[in-house]
Length: 192
Image 1: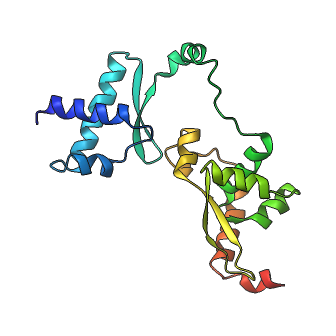
Image 2: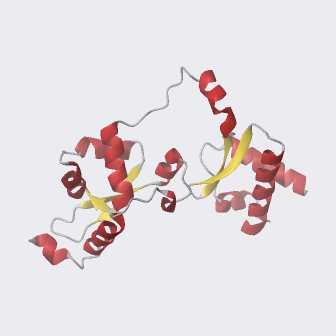
């Protein structure tokens, strides 16, 4: 297949996919190309879209590549779809999700200790929206579930990875403490 046909095929795959496509997913279709060749084609397409000021862009998000509307056309697209309501998260759901994103893996009890309210409904809703997942169980009495974010979370917020989350001072120590507890190193103090 010629390079132009490969570009067109990858472009069609990106256009038809509602979620970001990973290099591995593209490779399964184009088994005669390696991931470096696929990445080069994607980069060439990305640069072409930008150079020609097309209405679409190719971006890397959530570990994959996706075709999106160029940012400068957002106001017009919003007008076109003003009847279509994007599902928004409530403030309590966003607060719960932020705690999970920054402190993951984290238990329901740890979230409730920070929010001072029952978060059962919030967790259920975030699980249904697939923004969070059960990431395992804490090595503590009762082996409570621990929660973490999903790839859908990254897509929802347009992030490549969790490293792109805004930095908030003081969370790194809390996150490490939580990880130690989950590894069981602090299980004795959790039991008290």
